[in-house]
Length: 572
Ligand SMILES: Cc1cc2nc3c(=O)[nH]c(=O)nc-3n(C[C@H](O)[C@H](O)[C@H](O)COP(=O)(O)OP(=O)(O)OC[C@H]3O[C@@H](n4cnc5c(N)ncnc54)[C@H](O)[C@@H]3O)c2cc1C
Image (cartoon, rainbow, N blue to C red; front, side, top):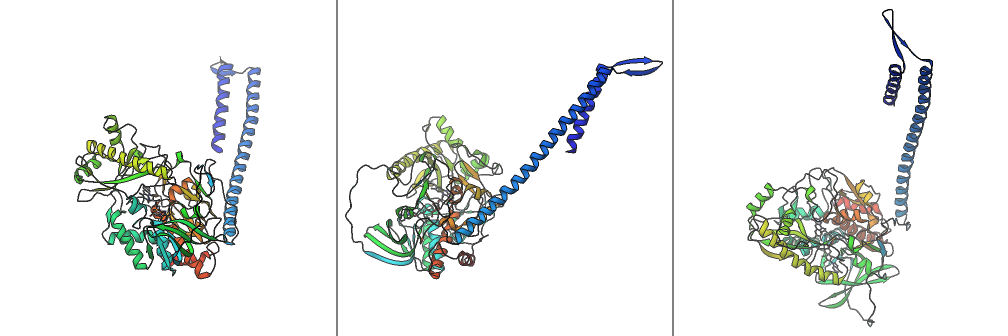
């Protein structure tokens, strides 16, 4: 405040001098200089000063009182925020079904199985069938991706008889069926994350078994997608998890708002599996959906895109690496197909990104101007293979709509040929590239997210949220919906058990990319390593709830956390 007062005094003094010099007359009297001031001028100067002083005092008082009000308001708001958060936690753990924060963007509708999500006009009435029971178990995990493997290992290691069921012929989910190998690419200098837990274990075991290649720009490992099938088999077999492959869950068995098993379809026909606890790790929340749980889905035109992942052989690795050294890409360049928000600190970090090369191919008429191509490369083998080329990104597809899936699979293959054509013409090292393979399936990033007892928010992820019922931590790593924030600051948030608990059905837990949250929290929780955190949390909670003889919503969170800590997980 002192600074302003000095400035105002100087201003007033300048006004006085101005008046003195311009409104007064200077007379020389017997060698002395006399300044003669007119009475009128003097009065007007005095009046100006008095009025100005009143005016300034009024402004200062107003400013100071506004400022004090604002500080008080801030304190009250922060206090209210924390009191509300504490109340929510107490409610959750006293078993009360709390008011769910439905403050999702207005364009995200809350849906459930009977919602008119897909518009059918005619129906066929299936006759009821007697379904043989294939087997039963304590914990049934549906979906064998990063979350499913973690859930099954964690449940079994906590002592539950556990089955892991998967619709494809291998475990690994997006890693092995889509071909995405980069489980730890976010791990730049400064990242704080759990040093234990199943995600880290998967990476370490894969590296030990010779199934990884170093990621180009930090110390993380890329998993060899094919080799990871063997790593997953090894981990699950060693732990004693009962595997079932080539088998899809298509219906649920419910009794008194609790799940008691699922119906499957496979080459063996339609078979039931009874289970005391079910964990939905299908990525799309298929089980929660079939059980009638509410969920949210981002409107199709705002959903994250789908990708066809492919790999090429016959690459000149040295020549290509030299090209990337001469033309380094940074995160500031991640904006070819979309506008990209960063927090600034990422902008100058190196990234294996190709975009301007495809723009050039379009300008030269090598590929169509409309081709949705641009993205990243990762592993390069000494045998001249570029595996995991994540270059075809297609939008406006809903992965829970079979006709969209069909169209996207075919468009993805067509666009892959365009991508290879452009690489051959424009990118040194790729001149003789050949298509080596496609992922077994299209890669889907975004579909159903359940509505749970707690719905994680972008605010939680960006503000280092802490939760009483934390089942693990995850770094502030956001990748999606035009935002890329890398965890170079050491910031991290806690993942609450509440976001795995569907509202309507007990003894069903949901883990992986379909846990409850908004768009921004999804852009963090969809990452493989985050999926392993929710998977492990769900597996342990399911097993402990059995041991305690309570449902999954009533489980003692302290017991769950103690077991997670015993398994190497960092909780807070
Ligand atoms: C193209 C692409 C690139 C990505 N890049 C990265 C990356 O670089 N790094 C990163 O960390 N994350 C990345 N992600 C995100 C991440 O891979 C996924 O979000 C993550 O794998 C989700 O794990 P999940 O276990 O929830 O589901 P998924 O990995 O999708 O696994 C679900 C499993 O359930 C099976 N399943 C589904 N429905 C049924 C059913 N009804 N019955 C039986 N089985 C079923 C599926 O076959 C699948 O194996 C990427 C995703 C995509 C699509």
